[in-house]
Image (cartoon, rainbow over all chains, first blue to last red; front, side):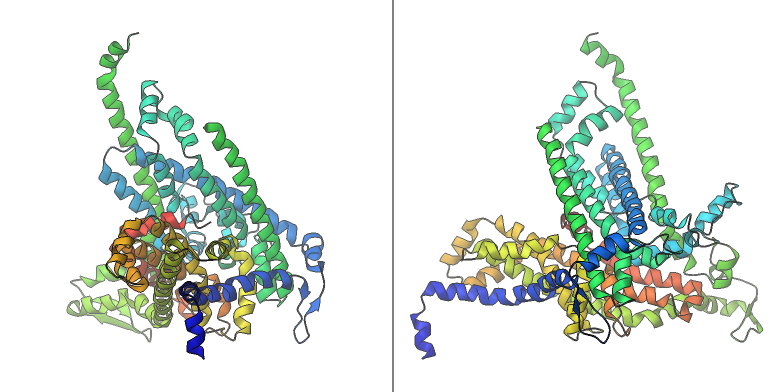
Length: 305
Length: 321
Protein backbone atom coordinates (compact mmCIF):
# COMPACT_ATOMS: atom_id res chain seq x y z
CA UNK A 1 0.00 0.00 0.00
CA UNK A 2 2.63 2.48 1.10
CA UNK A 3 4.89 1.31 -1.65
CA UNK A 4 2.08 1.86 -4.14
CA UNK A 5 1.39 5.39 -2.95
CA UNK A 6 5.08 6.22 -3.20
CA UNK A 7 5.19 4.93 -6.72
CA UNK A 8 2.30 7.10 -7.72
CA UNK A 9 4.08 10.21 -6.44
CA UNK A 10 5.93 11.89 -9.22
CA UNK A 11 9.67 12.19 -9.10
CA UNK A 12 9.31 15.91 -8.65
CA UNK A 13 7.05 15.62 -5.61
CA UNK A 14 9.44 13.25 -3.92
CA UNK A 15 12.30 15.64 -4.63
CA UNK A 16 10.47 18.56 -3.02
CA UNK A 17 9.42 16.44 -0.05
CA UNK A 18 13.06 15.41 0.39
CA UNK A 19 14.15 19.03 0.50
CA UNK A 20 11.53 19.90 3.09
CA UNK A 21 12.54 16.85 5.15
CA UNK A 22 16.05 18.29 5.29
CA UNK A 23 14.71 21.75 6.14
CA UNK A 24 12.41 20.45 8.88
CA UNK A 25 14.95 20.40 11.69
CA UNK A 26 16.55 23.82 11.07
CA UNK A 27 13.17 25.47 10.51
CA UNK A 28 11.75 23.68 13.54
CA UNK A 29 14.52 25.06 15.73
CA UNK A 30 13.95 28.51 14.27
CA UNK A 31 10.23 28.31 14.97
CA UNK A 32 10.52 27.07 18.55
CA UNK A 33 13.50 29.09 19.74
CA UNK A 34 13.18 32.31 17.70
CA UNK A 35 9.65 32.82 16.35
CA UNK A 36 7.82 31.43 19.36
CA UNK A 37 9.63 33.78 21.82
CA UNK A 38 9.23 36.70 19.44
CA UNK A 39 5.44 36.41 19.30
CA UNK A 40 5.17 35.26 22.89
CA UNK A 41 6.91 38.48 23.86
CA UNK A 42 4.18 40.55 22.20
CA UNK A 43 1.38 38.44 23.67
CA UNK A 44 2.88 38.31 27.18
CA UNK A 45 3.16 42.09 27.19
CA UNK A 46 -0.65 42.19 27.37
CA UNK A 47 -0.78 40.00 30.50
CA UNK A 48 0.03 40.38 34.16
CA UNK A 49 1.79 37.35 35.61
CA UNK A 50 1.48 36.86 39.33
CA UNK A 51 3.18 34.15 41.32
CA UNK A 52 0.71 31.43 42.22
CA UNK A 53 -2.13 32.85 40.11
CA UNK A 54 -3.12 32.37 36.47
CA UNK A 55 -1.99 35.03 34.02
CA UNK A 56 -4.47 37.87 33.80
CA UNK A 57 -5.20 39.75 30.55
CA UNK A 58 -4.69 43.47 31.12
CA UNK A 59 -4.64 44.85 27.58
CA UNK A 60 -2.30 47.79 27.14
CA UNK A 61 -2.07 48.45 30.88
CA UNK A 62 1.62 47.38 31.03
CA UNK A 63 2.51 49.88 28.31
CA UNK A 64 0.49 52.62 30.01
CA UNK A 65 2.28 51.93 33.26
CA UNK A 66 5.74 51.90 31.66
CA UNK A 67 5.27 55.01 29.55
CA UNK A 68 3.21 57.20 31.88
CA UNK A 69 3.30 55.99 35.47
CA UNK A 70 6.60 54.31 36.23
CA UNK A 71 8.94 56.90 37.82
CA UNK A 72 11.99 54.94 36.61
CA UNK A 73 11.07 55.12 32.93
CA UNK A 74 12.10 58.63 31.90
CA UNK A 75 15.31 58.87 33.93
CA UNK A 76 16.32 55.51 32.47
CA UNK A 77 15.61 56.73 28.93
CA UNK A 78 17.72 59.83 29.61
CA UNK A 79 20.60 57.65 30.81
CA UNK A 80 20.20 55.47 27.74
CA UNK A 81 20.15 58.50 25.45
CA UNK A 82 23.33 59.83 27.04
CA UNK A 83 25.18 56.51 26.76
CA UNK A 84 23.88 55.88 23.22
CA UNK A 85 24.74 59.38 21.99
CA UNK A 86 28.20 59.06 23.50
CA UNK A 87 28.69 55.59 22.00
CA UNK A 88 27.60 56.78 18.57
CA UNK A 89 29.89 59.82 18.64
CA UNK A 90 33.02 57.93 19.64
CA UNK A 91 32.39 55.03 17.26
CA UNK A 92 31.83 57.33 14.32
CA UNK A 93 34.96 59.39 14.91
CA UNK A 94 37.87 57.74 16.76
CA UNK A 95 38.06 54.45 14.81
CA UNK A 96 37.68 56.41 11.59
CA UNK A 97 40.66 58.57 12.49
CA UNK A 98 42.69 55.48 13.30
CA UNK A 99 41.68 53.78 10.04
CA UNK A 100 42.71 56.89 8.11
CA UNK A 101 46.06 57.02 9.89
CA UNK A 102 46.70 53.35 9.10
CA UNK A 103 45.65 53.92 5.51
CA UNK A 104 48.15 56.75 5.01
CA UNK A 105 51.09 54.49 5.86
CA UNK A 106 53.17 53.43 2.86
CA UNK A 107 54.31 50.09 4.22
CA UNK A 108 51.82 47.25 3.64
CA UNK A 109 53.21 45.14 6.49
CA UNK A 110 52.88 48.01 8.96
CA UNK A 111 49.26 48.54 7.89
CA UNK A 112 48.54 44.85 8.42
CA UNK A 113 50.22 44.83 11.84
CA UNK A 114 48.23 47.85 13.04
CA UNK A 115 44.96 46.33 11.91
CA UNK A 116 45.71 43.18 13.91
CA UNK A 117 46.84 45.24 16.90
CA UNK A 118 43.56 47.15 17.04
CA UNK A 119 41.45 44.03 16.54
CA UNK A 120 43.24 41.96 19.21
CA UNK A 121 41.24 43.26 22.22
CA UNK A 122 38.20 41.53 20.75
CA UNK A 123 39.40 38.24 22.27
CA UNK A 124 38.73 39.51 25.80
CA UNK A 125 35.13 38.67 26.76
CA UNK A 126 32.95 41.74 27.25
CA UNK A 127 32.14 40.77 30.83
CA UNK A 128 35.88 40.60 31.62
CA UNK A 129 36.39 44.07 30.11
CA UNK A 130 33.65 45.53 32.30
CA UNK A 131 34.99 43.82 35.41
CA UNK A 132 38.56 44.88 34.62
CA UNK A 133 37.51 48.51 34.29
CA UNK A 134 35.45 48.29 37.45
CA UNK A 135 38.17 46.84 39.62
CA UNK A 136 41.31 48.18 37.99
CA UNK A 137 40.39 51.61 36.66
CA UNK A 138 37.53 52.89 38.75
CA UNK A 139 38.31 51.46 42.19
CA UNK A 140 39.62 53.83 44.84
CA UNK A 141 43.26 53.05 44.11
CA UNK A 142 42.63 52.26 40.46
CA UNK A 143 44.23 53.72 37.35
CA UNK A 144 41.85 56.68 37.04
CA UNK A 145 42.48 57.99 40.54
CA UNK A 146 46.20 57.21 40.44
CA UNK A 147 46.38 59.25 37.25
CA UNK A 148 44.52 62.15 38.86
CA UNK A 149 46.96 62.05 41.79
CA UNK A 150 49.88 61.92 39.40
CA UNK A 151 48.86 65.14 37.64
CA UNK A 152 48.20 66.87 40.94
CA UNK A 153 44.44 66.59 41.02
CA UNK A 154 44.51 64.26 44.02
CA UNK A 155 41.76 66.26 45.75
CA UNK A 156 39.31 65.36 42.93
CA UNK A 157 39.53 61.56 43.04
CA UNK A 158 35.83 60.63 42.97
CA UNK A 159 34.57 57.22 43.98
CA UNK A 160 33.65 56.79 40.34
CA UNK A 161 31.01 54.08 40.25
CA UNK A 162 29.34 54.72 43.58
CA UNK A 163 28.95 58.48 43.22
CA UNK A 164 25.70 59.41 41.41
CA UNK A 165 27.37 62.40 39.72
CA UNK A 166 30.17 60.38 38.13
CA UNK A 167 28.79 56.84 37.72
CA UNK A 168 27.24 57.41 34.30
CA UNK A 169 30.33 59.20 33.01
CA UNK A 170 32.51 56.37 34.29
CA UNK A 171 30.42 53.85 32.37
CA UNK A 172 30.71 55.96 29.24
CA UNK A 173 34.50 56.07 29.63
CA UNK A 174 34.86 52.29 29.50
CA UNK A 175 36.90 51.11 26.58
CA UNK A 176 38.85 54.34 26.20
CA UNK A 177 40.22 55.09 23.59
CA UNK A 178 37.44 53.09 21.90
CA UNK A 179 39.50 51.80 19.01
CA UNK A 180 39.81 48.12 19.91
CA UNK A 181 37.25 46.42 17.72
CA UNK A 182 35.85 45.79 14.29
CA UNK A 183 35.04 49.45 13.47
CA UNK A 184 38.61 50.22 12.44
CA UNK A 185 38.50 47.32 9.97
CA UNK A 186 35.19 48.46 8.49
CA UNK A 187 36.40 52.02 7.96
CA UNK A 188 39.70 50.74 6.61
CA UNK A 189 37.87 48.57 4.09
CA UNK A 190 35.86 51.63 3.04
CA UNK A 191 38.95 53.78 2.61
CA UNK A 192 40.68 51.03 0.61
CA UNK A 193 37.68 50.80 -1.71
CA UNK A 194 37.95 54.42 -2.83
CA UNK A 195 38.96 54.21 -6.51
CA UNK A 196 42.55 55.24 -7.28
CA UNK A 197 41.18 57.60 -9.97
CA UNK A 198 39.42 59.62 -7.27
CA UNK A 199 42.57 59.84 -5.16
CA UNK A 200 44.58 60.77 -8.25
CA UNK A 201 42.12 63.51 -9.20
CA UNK A 202 42.28 64.89 -5.66
CA UNK A 203 46.06 64.90 -5.81
CA UNK A 204 46.11 66.78 -9.12
CA UNK A 205 43.69 69.35 -7.74
CA UNK A 206 46.01 69.86 -4.80
CA UNK A 207 43.46 68.50 -2.38
CA UNK A 208 45.33 66.80 0.46
CA UNK A 209 45.49 66.35 4.20
CA UNK A 210 42.44 67.27 6.27
CA UNK A 211 40.73 68.89 3.30
CA UNK A 212 40.95 65.66 1.33
CA UNK A 213 39.78 63.68 4.37
CA UNK A 214 36.62 65.71 4.87
CA UNK A 215 35.79 66.49 1.23
CA UNK A 216 36.70 63.18 -0.43
CA UNK A 217 37.18 60.35 2.09
CA UNK A 218 34.22 60.97 4.39
CA UNK A 219 31.63 61.30 1.60
CA UNK A 220 33.06 58.18 -0.08
CA UNK A 221 32.63 56.00 3.01
CA UNK A 222 29.15 57.15 4.02
CA UNK A 223 27.97 53.54 3.57
CA UNK A 224 30.38 52.30 6.22
CA UNK A 225 29.48 55.20 8.48
CA UNK A 226 25.81 54.38 8.14
CA UNK A 227 26.49 50.76 9.10
CA UNK A 228 28.43 51.77 12.20
CA UNK A 229 25.80 54.39 13.05
CA UNK A 230 22.96 51.87 12.88
CA UNK A 231 24.88 49.22 14.82
CA UNK A 232 25.87 51.75 17.50
CA UNK A 233 22.30 52.99 17.89
CA UNK A 234 20.91 49.45 18.13
CA UNK A 235 23.64 48.60 20.62
CA UNK A 236 23.06 51.79 22.57
CA UNK A 237 19.34 51.15 22.96
CA UNK A 238 19.58 47.53 24.03
CA UNK A 239 22.85 47.24 25.95
CA UNK A 240 22.52 46.94 29.70
CA UNK A 241 25.11 44.30 30.55
CA UNK A 242 27.74 46.93 31.31
CA UNK A 243 25.42 48.70 33.74
CA UNK A 244 24.32 45.45 35.39
CA UNK A 245 27.93 44.35 35.87
CA UNK A 246 29.37 47.66 37.05
CA UNK A 247 26.70 49.47 39.06
CA UNK A 248 23.51 47.38 38.91
CA UNK A 249 21.79 50.58 37.86
CA UNK A 250 22.82 52.47 40.97
CA UNK A 251 23.53 54.41 42.99
CA UNK A 252 19.77 54.79 43.31
CA UNK A 253 18.61 54.80 39.70
CA UNK A 254 21.47 57.03 38.52
CA UNK A 255 22.66 54.61 35.85
CA UNK A 256 19.53 52.53 35.22
CA UNK A 257 18.71 52.07 31.54
CA UNK A 258 15.41 50.67 30.17
CA UNK A 259 16.98 47.30 29.29
CA UNK A 260 18.18 46.88 32.85
CA UNK A 261 14.77 47.84 34.19
CA UNK A 262 13.31 45.14 31.96
CA UNK A 263 15.83 42.66 33.39
CA UNK A 264 14.94 43.54 36.98
CA UNK A 265 11.21 43.33 36.33
CA UNK A 266 11.59 39.90 34.75
CA UNK A 267 14.17 38.22 36.91
CA UNK A 268 13.96 40.01 40.26
CA UNK A 269 10.28 41.01 40.51
CA UNK A 270 8.90 38.16 38.34
CA UNK A 271 6.81 40.68 36.36
CA UNK A 272 7.27 38.90 33.03
CA UNK A 273 4.41 40.70 31.28
CA UNK A 274 5.68 44.13 32.27
CA UNK A 275 9.22 43.16 31.22
CA UNK A 276 7.92 42.04 27.82
CA UNK A 277 6.14 45.38 27.40
CA UNK A 278 9.46 47.16 28.00
CA UNK A 279 11.13 44.82 25.50
CA UNK A 280 8.50 45.51 22.86
CA UNK A 281 8.79 49.27 23.44
CA UNK A 282 12.56 49.08 22.90
CA UNK A 283 12.00 46.98 19.77
CA UNK A 284 9.69 49.64 18.36
CA UNK A 285 12.26 52.32 19.20
CA UNK A 286 15.10 50.37 17.51
CA UNK A 287 12.92 49.66 14.48
CA UNK A 288 11.95 53.33 14.09
CA UNK A 289 15.48 54.65 14.52
CA UNK A 290 16.87 52.13 12.01
CA UNK A 291 14.16 52.95 9.45
CA UNK A 292 14.79 56.69 9.87
CA UNK A 293 18.49 56.11 9.43
CA UNK A 294 18.16 54.07 6.27
CA UNK A 295 15.87 56.68 4.81
CA UNK A 296 17.91 59.70 5.76
CA UNK A 297 21.19 58.22 4.63
CA UNK A 298 19.79 56.90 1.38
CA UNK A 299 19.06 60.51 0.48
CA UNK A 300 22.67 61.45 1.13
CA UNK A 301 23.94 58.66 -1.09
CA UNK A 302 21.79 59.49 -4.07
CA UNK A 303 22.90 63.11 -3.81
CA UNK A 304 26.44 61.96 -4.13
CA UNK A 305 25.76 60.09 -7.40
CA UNK B 1 52.48 79.45 -12.11
CA UNK B 2 53.21 76.57 -14.50
CA UNK B 3 52.51 73.12 -13.20
CA UNK B 4 55.90 71.84 -14.38
CA UNK B 5 57.79 74.47 -12.43
CA UNK B 6 55.95 74.03 -9.21
CA UNK B 7 56.29 70.26 -9.41
CA UNK B 8 60.05 70.47 -9.79
CA UNK B 9 60.40 72.99 -7.04
CA UNK B 10 58.28 71.14 -4.50
CA UNK B 11 59.25 67.53 -5.23
CA UNK B 12 61.95 67.14 -2.53
CA UNK B 13 59.94 68.96 0.09
CA UNK B 14 56.85 66.88 -0.77
CA UNK B 15 58.79 63.69 -0.09
CA UNK B 16 60.03 65.19 3.15
CA UNK B 17 56.52 66.21 4.08
CA UNK B 18 55.32 62.69 3.38
CA UNK B 19 57.99 61.23 5.66
CA UNK B 20 56.91 63.61 8.40
CA UNK B 21 53.28 62.65 7.98
CA UNK B 22 54.18 58.96 8.15
CA UNK B 23 56.21 59.47 11.29
CA UNK B 24 53.38 61.40 12.93
CA UNK B 25 50.90 58.69 11.94
CA UNK B 26 53.12 55.99 13.43
CA UNK B 27 53.45 58.01 16.63
CA UNK B 28 49.72 58.52 17.01
CA UNK B 29 48.91 54.89 16.20
CA UNK B 30 51.49 53.55 18.62
CA UNK B 31 50.19 55.83 21.37
CA UNK B 32 46.59 54.72 20.77
CA UNK B 33 47.67 51.09 20.56
CA UNK B 34 49.49 51.39 23.87
CA UNK B 35 46.45 52.99 25.51
CA UNK B 36 44.24 50.23 24.14
CA UNK B 37 46.48 47.41 25.30
CA UNK B 38 47.65 48.98 28.58
CA UNK B 39 44.76 47.64 30.71
CA UNK B 40 45.47 44.11 29.51
CA UNK B 41 49.15 44.52 30.27
CA UNK B 42 48.26 45.56 33.82
CA UNK B 43 45.94 42.58 34.14
CA UNK B 44 48.80 40.28 33.12
CA UNK B 45 51.19 41.96 35.56
CA UNK B 46 48.70 41.92 38.42
CA UNK B 47 47.82 38.28 37.89
CA UNK B 48 51.27 37.38 39.26
CA UNK B 49 51.07 39.62 42.32
CA UNK B 50 49.69 38.96 45.78
CA UNK B 51 46.80 40.86 47.31
CA UNK B 52 49.16 42.59 49.74
CA UNK B 53 51.35 43.82 46.90
CA UNK B 54 48.33 44.97 44.92
CA UNK B 55 47.02 46.96 47.86
CA UNK B 56 50.38 48.60 48.43
CA UNK B 57 50.92 49.89 44.91
CA UNK B 58 48.95 49.78 41.73
CA UNK B 59 51.90 48.97 39.53
CA UNK B 60 55.09 47.02 40.09
CA UNK B 61 57.18 44.09 39.04
CA UNK B 62 55.68 41.00 40.72
CA UNK B 63 57.70 40.42 43.91
CA UNK B 64 57.59 36.68 43.40
CA UNK B 65 59.51 37.17 40.15
CA UNK B 66 62.34 39.09 41.78
CA UNK B 67 62.46 36.66 44.71
CA UNK B 68 62.67 33.69 42.37
CA UNK B 69 66.28 34.54 41.57
CA UNK B 70 67.27 35.71 45.03
CA UNK B 71 70.76 34.69 46.22
CA UNK B 72 69.96 35.32 49.87
CA UNK B 73 67.28 33.69 52.03
CA UNK B 74 63.93 35.43 51.74
CA UNK B 75 61.66 35.89 54.73
CA UNK B 76 58.00 35.05 54.11
CA UNK B 77 54.83 34.48 56.11
CA UNK B 78 53.58 30.92 55.70
CA UNK B 79 49.95 29.78 55.77
CA UNK B 80 49.80 30.08 59.57
CA UNK B 81 51.19 33.62 59.35
CA UNK B 82 54.47 32.42 60.90
CA UNK B 83 57.73 33.87 59.69
CA UNK B 84 59.76 31.45 57.64
CA UNK B 85 63.00 31.70 55.72
CA UNK B 86 63.21 30.35 52.22
CA UNK B 87 66.79 29.31 51.37
CA UNK B 88 68.09 30.55 48.00
CA UNK B 89 68.15 27.09 46.39
CA UNK B 90 64.44 26.66 47.09
CA UNK B 91 63.49 30.22 46.09
CA UNK B 92 62.76 29.44 42.45
CA UNK B 93 60.21 26.68 43.00
CA UNK B 94 58.67 28.36 46.05
CA UNK B 95 58.12 31.71 44.36
CA UNK B 96 57.09 30.14 41.10
CA UNK B 97 54.28 28.64 43.14
CA UNK B 98 53.57 32.04 44.71
CA UNK B 99 53.48 33.81 41.34
CA UNK B 100 51.06 31.29 39.88
CA UNK B 101 48.98 30.93 43.04
CA UNK B 102 46.27 33.12 41.50
CA UNK B 103 46.15 30.92 38.43
CA UNK B 104 45.87 27.75 40.54
CA UNK B 105 42.95 29.17 42.54
CA UNK B 106 41.27 30.57 39.43
CA UNK B 107 41.66 27.27 37.65
CA UNK B 108 39.96 25.41 40.49
CA UNK B 109 36.92 27.65 40.17
CA UNK B 110 36.92 28.13 36.42
CA UNK B 111 37.81 24.68 35.09
CA UNK B 112 34.20 23.50 35.23
CA UNK B 113 33.02 26.72 33.57
CA UNK B 114 35.72 26.44 30.92
CA UNK B 115 34.73 22.86 30.19
CA UNK B 116 31.08 23.90 29.78
CA UNK B 117 32.14 26.73 27.49
CA UNK B 118 34.18 24.39 25.30
CA UNK B 119 31.29 21.92 25.08
CA UNK B 120 28.80 24.63 24.12
CA UNK B 121 31.09 26.51 21.69
CA UNK B 122 32.29 23.44 19.80
CA UNK B 123 28.94 21.68 19.55
CA UNK B 124 27.13 24.86 18.51
CA UNK B 125 29.83 25.68 15.95
CA UNK B 126 29.60 22.19 14.50
CA UNK B 127 25.80 22.27 14.41
CA UNK B 128 25.64 25.76 12.93
CA UNK B 129 28.14 24.93 10.17
CA UNK B 130 26.34 21.70 9.31
CA UNK B 131 22.78 23.02 9.40
CA UNK B 132 23.65 26.40 7.94
CA UNK B 133 25.56 24.98 4.99
CA UNK B 134 22.90 22.39 4.12
CA UNK B 135 20.06 24.92 4.27
CA UNK B 136 22.04 27.52 2.35
CA UNK B 137 23.02 24.93 -0.27
CA UNK B 138 19.39 23.92 -0.80
CA UNK B 139 18.26 27.54 -1.04
CA UNK B 140 21.11 28.60 -3.31
CA UNK B 141 21.28 25.74 -5.80
CA UNK B 142 17.75 24.28 -6.02
CA UNK B 143 14.46 25.67 -7.25
CA UNK B 144 11.48 24.39 -5.29
CA UNK B 145 8.09 25.78 -4.37
CA UNK B 146 8.33 27.99 -1.30
CA UNK B 147 12.10 28.49 -1.41
CA UNK B 148 11.81 32.28 -1.36
CA UNK B 149 9.37 32.19 1.52
CA UNK B 150 11.69 29.89 3.47
CA UNK B 151 14.61 32.25 2.90
CA UNK B 152 12.56 35.23 3.99
CA UNK B 153 11.31 33.31 7.05
CA UNK B 154 14.93 32.73 8.05
CA UNK B 155 16.41 36.15 7.24
CA UNK B 156 13.54 38.12 8.82
CA UNK B 157 14.71 36.96 12.25
CA UNK B 158 17.80 39.15 11.89
CA UNK B 159 15.53 42.06 12.79
CA UNK B 160 14.56 40.61 16.16
CA UNK B 161 16.65 42.50 18.70
CA UNK B 162 18.25 40.62 21.58
CA UNK B 163 16.62 42.87 24.15
CA UNK B 164 13.12 41.87 23.01
CA UNK B 165 14.02 38.17 22.84
CA UNK B 166 15.66 37.78 26.26
CA UNK B 167 12.61 37.51 28.52
CA UNK B 168 10.26 35.46 26.26
CA UNK B 169 13.13 33.13 25.27
CA UNK B 170 13.69 32.51 28.94
CA UNK B 171 9.99 31.73 29.33
CA UNK B 172 10.10 29.24 26.43
CA UNK B 173 13.20 27.50 27.75
CA UNK B 174 11.67 27.38 31.23
CA UNK B 175 8.40 25.87 29.91
CA UNK B 176 10.43 23.22 28.07
CA UNK B 177 12.18 22.36 31.33
CA UNK B 178 15.64 23.14 29.97
CA UNK B 179 16.86 25.65 32.58
CA UNK B 180 20.25 24.90 34.17
CA UNK B 181 21.32 22.56 31.42
CA UNK B 182 23.52 22.35 28.37
CA UNK B 183 20.41 22.37 26.18
CA UNK B 184 19.29 25.78 27.46
CA UNK B 185 22.34 27.18 25.70
CA UNK B 186 22.71 24.72 22.83
CA UNK B 187 19.23 24.95 21.25
CA UNK B 188 18.80 28.75 21.24
CA UNK B 189 22.40 29.33 20.08
CA UNK B 190 21.95 26.80 17.29
CA UNK B 191 18.58 28.22 16.25
CA UNK B 192 19.83 31.82 16.23
CA UNK B 193 23.35 31.12 14.98
CA UNK B 194 22.23 29.27 11.86
CA UNK B 195 20.61 32.46 10.53
CA UNK B 196 23.90 34.30 10.16
CA UNK B 197 25.50 31.11 8.83
CA UNK B 198 22.82 30.67 6.18
CA UNK B 199 23.21 34.30 5.16
CA UNK B 200 26.99 33.97 4.74
CA UNK B 201 26.93 30.50 3.16
CA UNK B 202 24.18 31.40 0.70
CA UNK B 203 26.10 34.45 -0.46
CA UNK B 204 29.06 32.20 -1.15
CA UNK B 205 27.13 29.34 -2.79
CA UNK B 206 25.22 31.75 -5.04
CA UNK B 207 28.52 32.74 -6.58
CA UNK B 208 29.74 29.22 -7.42
CA UNK B 209 29.70 28.64 -11.20
CA UNK B 210 26.95 26.33 -12.44
CA UNK B 211 29.39 24.50 -14.79
CA UNK B 212 31.04 22.97 -11.74
CA UNK B 213 27.81 21.26 -10.74
CA UNK B 214 26.92 20.45 -14.34
CA UNK B 215 30.09 18.49 -14.99
CA UNK B 216 29.84 16.66 -11.67
CA UNK B 217 26.25 15.72 -12.47
CA UNK B 218 27.36 14.36 -15.84
CA UNK B 219 29.85 12.22 -13.94
CA UNK B 220 26.90 10.76 -12.10
CA UNK B 221 27.21 12.59 -8.78
CA UNK B 222 23.98 12.63 -6.74
CA UNK B 223 22.69 15.51 -4.61
CA UNK B 224 24.53 14.27 -1.55
CA UNK B 225 27.78 13.84 -3.44
CA UNK B 226 27.52 17.34 -4.91
CA UNK B 227 27.34 18.70 -1.38
CA UNK B 228 30.16 16.63 0.13
CA UNK B 229 32.51 16.48 -2.86
CA UNK B 230 32.10 19.95 -4.37
CA UNK B 231 30.41 22.39 -2.05
CA UNK B 232 32.11 21.56 1.26
CA UNK B 233 35.72 21.37 -0.02
CA UNK B 234 35.30 24.69 -1.85
CA UNK B 235 33.83 26.49 1.14
CA UNK B 236 36.57 25.80 3.69
CA UNK B 237 37.33 29.54 4.16
CA UNK B 238 33.63 30.32 4.72
CA UNK B 239 33.30 27.40 7.10
CA UNK B 240 36.14 28.76 9.25
CA UNK B 241 34.63 32.25 9.22
CA UNK B 242 31.24 30.92 10.34
CA UNK B 243 32.78 28.61 12.94
CA UNK B 244 34.93 31.39 14.41
CA UNK B 245 32.06 33.86 14.56
CA UNK B 246 29.85 31.27 16.25
CA UNK B 247 32.53 30.42 18.80
CA UNK B 248 33.20 34.11 19.46
CA UNK B 249 29.49 34.82 19.96
CA UNK B 250 28.90 31.85 22.25
CA UNK B 251 32.07 32.55 24.22
CA UNK B 252 31.18 36.19 24.85
CA UNK B 253 27.49 35.79 25.58
CA UNK B 254 27.06 36.71 29.22
CA UNK B 255 23.39 37.53 29.67
CA UNK B 256 21.76 34.34 28.39
CA UNK B 257 23.79 31.81 30.43
CA UNK B 258 23.50 34.16 33.39
CA UNK B 259 19.69 34.18 33.40
CA UNK B 260 19.13 30.54 32.42
CA UNK B 261 21.36 29.28 35.25
CA UNK B 262 19.00 29.82 38.11
CA UNK B 263 20.82 27.29 40.33
CA UNK B 264 24.28 27.89 38.88
CA UNK B 265 24.85 24.32 37.71
CA UNK B 266 25.81 25.05 34.10
CA UNK B 267 27.68 28.33 34.11
CA UNK B 268 30.01 29.12 31.24
CA UNK B 269 33.08 31.32 31.46
CA UNK B 270 31.33 34.67 30.88
CA UNK B 271 28.62 34.18 33.48
CA UNK B 272 31.01 32.23 35.71
CA UNK B 273 33.44 35.16 35.89
CA UNK B 274 30.69 37.43 37.15
CA UNK B 275 29.47 34.86 39.65
CA UNK B 276 33.01 34.24 40.84
CA UNK B 277 33.35 37.89 41.85
CA UNK B 278 30.81 37.30 44.61
CA UNK B 279 32.54 34.26 46.10
CA UNK B 280 35.27 34.30 48.79
CA UNK B 281 37.84 33.42 46.10
CA UNK B 282 37.52 37.01 44.89
CA UNK B 283 39.10 38.22 48.14
CA UNK B 284 42.40 37.32 46.55
CA UNK B 285 42.89 40.03 43.93
CA UNK B 286 45.61 38.10 42.10
CA UNK B 287 43.09 35.33 41.50
CA UNK B 288 40.67 37.72 39.87
CA UNK B 289 43.28 38.96 37.43
CA UNK B 290 44.39 35.39 36.72
CA UNK B 291 40.75 34.52 36.01
CA UNK B 292 40.53 37.33 33.42
CA UNK B 293 43.65 35.98 31.76
CA UNK B 294 42.28 32.44 31.71
CA UNK B 295 38.98 33.62 30.24
CA UNK B 296 40.70 35.29 27.27
CA UNK B 297 43.55 32.86 26.62
CA UNK B 298 41.67 30.29 24.48
CA UNK B 299 40.27 33.00 22.21
CA UNK B 300 43.69 34.64 21.98
CA UNK B 301 45.13 31.32 20.81
CA UNK B 302 42.33 30.99 18.27
CA UNK B 303 43.01 34.55 17.10
CA UNK B 304 46.72 33.81 16.63
CA UNK B 305 46.08 30.48 14.91
CA UNK B 306 43.45 31.82 12.51
CA UNK B 307 44.05 35.56 12.14
CA UNK B 308 42.82 35.76 8.56
CA UNK B 309 39.39 34.08 8.92
CA UNK B 310 39.06 35.89 12.24
CA UNK B 311 39.44 39.28 10.57
CA UNK B 312 37.10 38.28 7.73
CA UNK B 313 34.57 36.97 10.21
CA UNK B 314 34.56 40.05 12.39
CA UNK B 315 34.04 42.29 9.39
CA UNK B 316 31.28 40.12 7.94
CA UNK B 317 29.78 39.73 11.41
CA UNK B 318 29.29 43.46 11.48
CA UNK B 319 26.75 43.15 8.70
CA UNK B 320 24.59 40.98 10.91
CA UNK B 321 22.50 44.00 11.90
